[in-house]
Image 1 (spheres, rainbow, N blue to C red):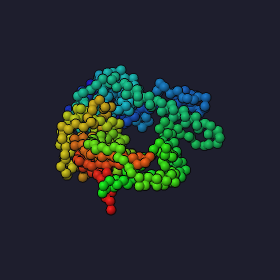
Image 2 (image 1 turned 90 degrees about the horizontal axis):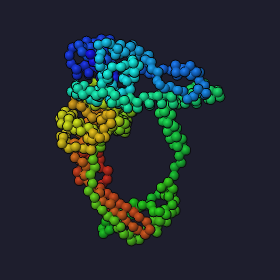
Image 3 (image 1 turned 60 degrees about the horizontal axis):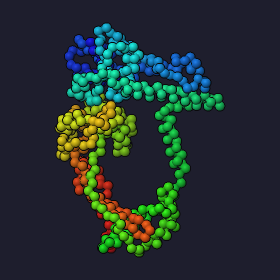
Image 4 (image 1 turned 60 degrees about the vertical axis):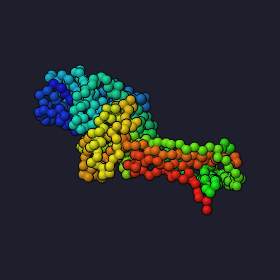
Length: 457
């Protein structure tokens, strides 16, 4: 009998569907003739309170710091105690001969099932399945390719180390700050954490900088250089002896004097070049870049974007693993691209200039981490049935996948370096020759093709 332990109920349901056969639902698991499928609810095991490691930790004293909370002593999360009991009983069943770890394919997913196995004192062999994509074909493929769970011990130790360090640092430093504060009459708790405290510091420093900021003017120069019937407008490039403060010219008198001294002087074109250049499509999203994009374009919070991607993945099975920190895709995913591209054609009204044989730099197995970038699956939802936020997130993910198969943007860039007296000036301009993927994304051109020429009047 095989026992699958999934990270959450939705994944357990997907595994049952992928396995097929006659499963009977029980209170906390599914069972067929040769397979059991159960699930956690995220982390269902936690570290015991400090006083269970050492009775002296019950009272907050400076001399007991830092707290020593390793090796970890586990206990069930109170709200999940019933499910923990169920899973342990399943692990210890005599007819269960093999366990399949089906946590999410990241370090936390690795930890949350491994810690249950450790708490249960498991000695049975454990395999690992990595489910990045919750569509039925993808789950079947993952289940057909189990790996040895020992191969992922490094991932487990990474998450465990972070968890233990966070507990030791957070609990110890909270006591270290709170104890002397209370000795001086403070009634609350000064909470300290590895993440929360630096973020709070950044916010405080930024707030103070804004409050203390004093507006000041800085100056630059623009030269208009006549060439035939045209005038080239070029920007000043500060020289070695320009009186700069934090790379800005604050001395108005110096700026006026320099401009007056250069007026009417002849200038020399020191260098000129025309280069043909290309811009590749942006990589597909990882979670952080997607959150930044959605915030900038639609003012969505990071949590809103995360919640919506969770829905798109679990409810609609429309995207791959959503908590990914990677922006690259595997070579295997490139071979699967024709099916995904074909499915996405129903989403967009305009013809798509995509070529499934065009391989962008995003497809690089060597750069794939525990996950791959967030991309659409072949399970395309009815976008009109999605909420506006769901639709915006899904379309952003789909668009940044499609551009991997579109032409690069090509343009010509002209640059000119001009010397006038002791000062240097430069001018630069671009001319788009093929908008490529940018036409699909609807991005406006960044520069015009005039080389800053002004027609003489």
